[in-house]
Length: 317
Image (cartoon, rainbow, N blue to C red; front, side):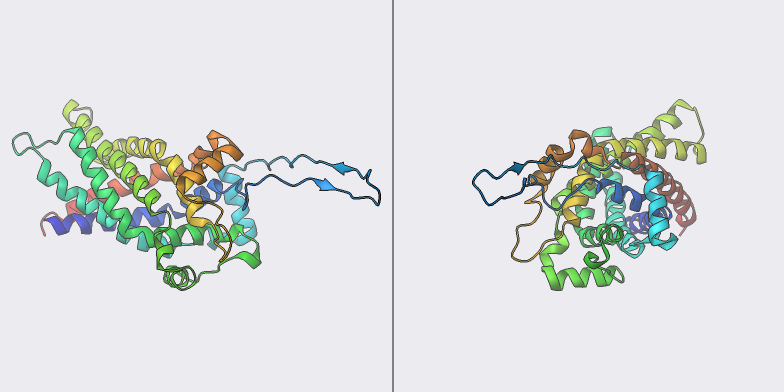
């Protein structure tokens, strides 16, 4: 019974991840908008004359380019990189869902079975949240290498050709990172990944179960597609609001290019958050929110609708 939860969750997660991958890629590109390699102040432009009275002209930094919306970002990707670019890093998505989501869904299912009251066949919301926090944290730690590879592969197309990493696949990405930057680089941003996964899993799975139970208890709808779609959409919205700030920082930390002998762009998650807010304002932490909810909504709907169908198919096995 315990192993079945991993299988069911894994199948549903891979289907949901692959079907919404282009939206996830657009989200990553939007979260990297406005990011610069260095956050130091631009030096003054000085014209030095032959005499002590030379003139120094201090020019203000240029205004940041206008932020493109999700449709514009997607269109730009298609125009400059081609339609297949919308699925850049899809192999990493498959591996990530196989490692991360299979683990978190399976563990949540096990904890849910253990903590459900046998008399009432229900579990308090607080326990659902705790189960989600535990399952999400462990799943994220397992899947972090694939997560780093996915972010880099999705972001590669926005770099100048000479700076692109050009990973051929998720295996090539992971092996290249391990060789060039050390095995520890595979867990870069892992604290952020774990924190984000704990928040997403707790808000997503707990909200879905709670809303579904409320709908069934109130007899508003029967246990069918309408209930599953409604509960999963609410779960997707809650998860998006809760996780977007961490997701922005996670994306930037994972994507940063570390040059040997030089100081990395960010010293850590907090440093990245401070530099991002200082340079771009607090709302920068909600960059990519539209594609996040646009992706998280369909992802969560596909995830739970597929999960419910897979459960029915495997029920008698």
